[in-house]
Amino acid sequence: MGGEITKVVALVAVIVVVLDGASALSLCNVTEDGFTACKPSVTPPSPVPPTPECCDAVSGADMKCLCSYRNSFMLPSLGIDPDLALALPAKCNRPSPTEC
Image 1 (cartoon, rainbow, N blue to C red):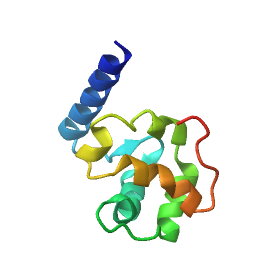
Image 2: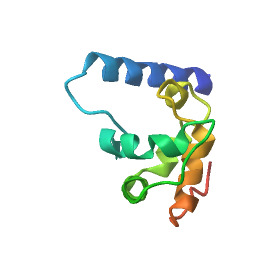
Image 3: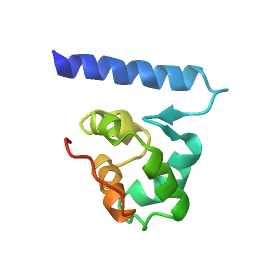
Image 4: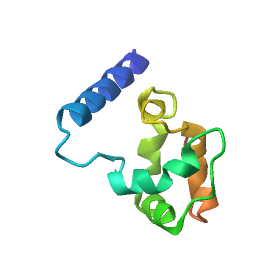
């Protein structure tokens, strides 16, 4: 049942983002600019090393929150590989999430 609730929450989040196009995307303390800066580093098949702007976004991100999306369709629906996203802290010399 917990998986179903996660899917519903993720679906609602996607609907809110789609319907509220005037406001900027923000997920787990990562702004739309942060997603844009990190997208080349979390998009297969040839991710690039994170930029300083991406690492700034990672330093402010709620990684535990992002971990909750690891097995959902939310990140992939945004073109983000969850495993690449969760590898960013190490690539940015930041602490990695401990419970993921």
